[in-house]
Image (cartoon, rainbow, N blue to C red; front, side):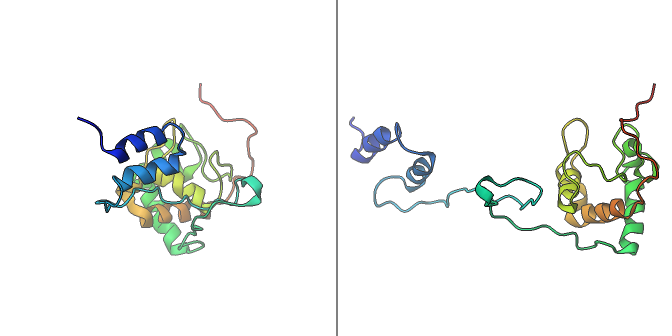
Length: 165
């Protein structure tokens, strides 16, 4: 059985076609056919002003802002949530650091903006930070971020990571 002419053309096109063209061909099927499903295209990332943009043009993406920034009542609720979610098991009381890093010293491995801290809590991070977004949702994570932002910086910042012997 001979392949349909558009199939053989598509097969020869696939050898040189850029990935975008391959996506269009995969979605469109044969000539004249209406796609039955919309193409799956990844959503744009979140704008991150701390990153260096190639050519000075940052990729499109929404700017994420903490809706509770500076709200003392939300920060107090966040302190209770911090304890009830057992965050203090790794980050110690008042987020001073234990197995997990100090969260009140202003030094963040994955970025210090509210949006970066949100992503760390919501999606988790390698080497031990679980993703809490599924349990808390965005609102709960923002409450934790607000609490962490309310912590006063320590008076004496160590230059090295504290390790227990």
